[in-house]
Each structure stands twice: as C-alpha cells, then as structure tokens.
Length: 196
Image 1 (tube, rainbow, N blue to C red):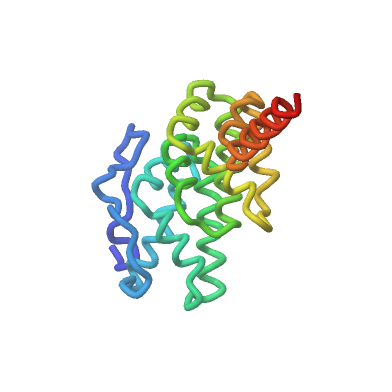
Image 2 (cartoon, rainbow, N blue to C red):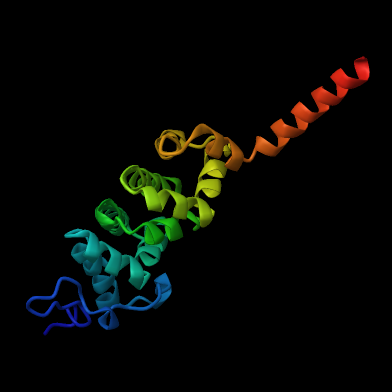
C-alpha cells in the first residue's frame, strides 16, 4: 500500500456503507496536512459522489469542512481549489440526509458553496414532508430567510426554491423583517384608532 492510500475507506463485500471508524473524525487545519493526508482528504469525497449513503458517510466525517477551508484558503493552489470545489459539488449533489444539509446551512460557508447546499436542500425538501417540519424546527428556514435578505446576496433564487416548499405564512413568519412589518401594522392601527 503506498502512502497516498493509507486510511482510505474500504467496503466489505455486501456492505452498502463504508466503515465510519476509518474516516477522519474532524477537519484538519491546512498547515497540519501532510501530502498523504491531503491526498486522503481529496480522495474521500470521491467515495461520497456514488450514492446518498456514501455522501452521508463523507459528510459525517467532517471532511466537507476541510474541503471548504482548503478551497477558501489563499495559500491553496488554483489546482487544489478546483479539486476541492469539484469534490464539494459532487458530494453535496448526492447528499439527501437533511440533518447533514441542515448542519451545513448553519455554518459560515463561502457563497458559492452555500448556493450548492441551498439548491440541494430545496430538492430534498420538495420530496420530504416530514423533513420540511424538521427544517423549520431546527432553525434552518429562519437561517435561510436571513441569507436571502443579506445585502448583495446571490442566494435569492435558491432561497425562493426552498420557500416554495412552504406556505406563504410560514415563510413570512420566519422572515427577519416580519416583526418590523407587524409593528408597523400595529402602529397604523393605533394611529387610525386615535384619529376617531
């Protein structure tokens, strides 16, 4: 076995998911990555692009956070950034486990990565009624609404896809400007009442 392959996942015959104990448990800072560790970090997501089960296993390792940090690190080469971006895109596209996607929604991610995550969340929510309620209870819908109202946000289209999975009243309720709208309505009612 060469140094670049050590620690890679293996799947016994008949197994549908990799053995999680062989995966790294937390993201590794860029300055701690040796050449073999960097190779493993880039190879693990290749497994995640096969099935939703594989994508969930990769997401559970924390490998996606390492890829995001490498992709946004100014010291990373253009080639490494491209490989990280491709790996993120392929794993996120297969990820259908809503709690794993929800965990990504609550992280500070570059806008391009967040757009991929939100687009995948929209696809999953469109087909998962129980997941829609879970996403609201976890605070995911509120977080998404805040992203949409951020100045200069390019996430509006992805947010609108997610919003289309919910009744308009729920989307308004979790909108950051909803409380302000209610206060304005209350003030206008008070002004109308005092006018009589």
